Image 1: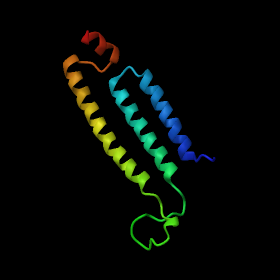
Image 2 (image 1 turned 135 degrees about the vertical axis):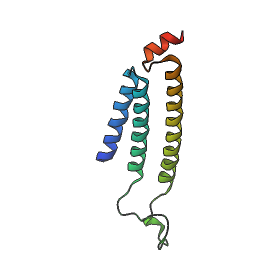
Image 3 (image 1 turned 180 degrees about the vertical axis):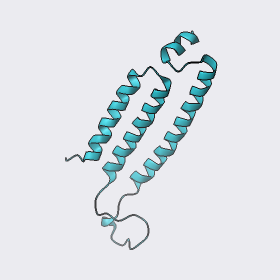
Image 4 (image 1 turned 90 degrees about the vertical axis):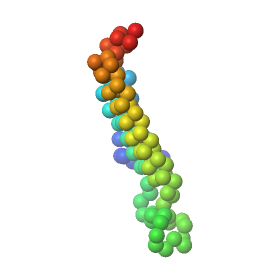
Length: 115
């Protein structure tokens, strides 16, 4: 099994973002790392579903189904992008509310103030 450069980059980006998420003391950085992890996962799945030379699954002459790309990967990743945008928006709204209430974005300070 041969890995492409994009797949390796996506896996590295995911684990670097995961490390950043675990070690981050700032809530804003945590949200950025979550977005980077989502982007890496989407990039990985799109690179797996890509095959050079295949035709798009819509339009044209599709009588030979062997030369047509599978649209399932793209459809799932579009759904993942939309869900990722919604999760990021909710995270930002929760962060704004938390910052207005507790006046900090540091996880340790937020934990101390909430107790």
